[in-house]
Length: 181
Image 1: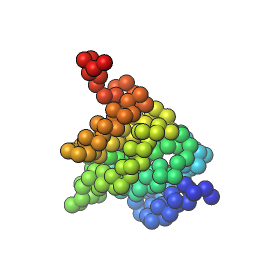
Image 2 (image 1 turned 180 degrees about the horizontal axis):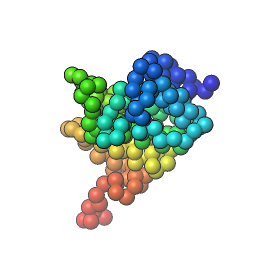
Image 3 (image 1 turned 90 degrees about the vertical axis):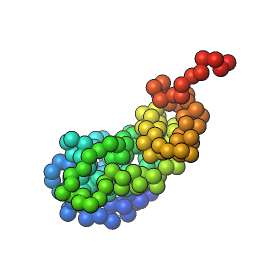
Image 4 (image 1 turned 135 degrees about the horizontal axis):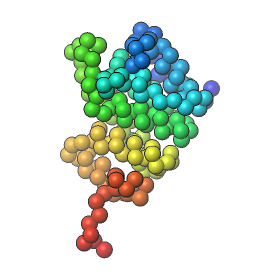
């Protein structure tokens, strides 16, 4: 078993997936196996509908799936898998709603963003190094833009944007000052 799968397995084993509801309206038990298959490259699937239900609604399995995705990102993996995991993180921290009956008294979007912030330096590293290709770089930058939206944090994002300008897609590059030579 490779290191990234071992780390993911440690995170997966922390949760009772069979007791959680998936975005596909079934038990989330299959989601643990799907996340591992994606990391191992045996499957190329988009798991977004399993962690974000129709209508942009987070489900019970959203936060655990985010934790597993962060573990997968931390350990590398194929470019294809990294692309899927970065996209999954972006979907989970976006402006999602939530089902009030599942999250009574909780704020799942804030919980997902707080968990994602534990991986900030992985996202910064991806933007600056671009080791997984332009799609992942753009996704990592979008994640940072959502998570680092105030004061000093926003300044850091702008500085990284300037430093990584050529690695970013044209629409994410810093504005060019026509008066600079």
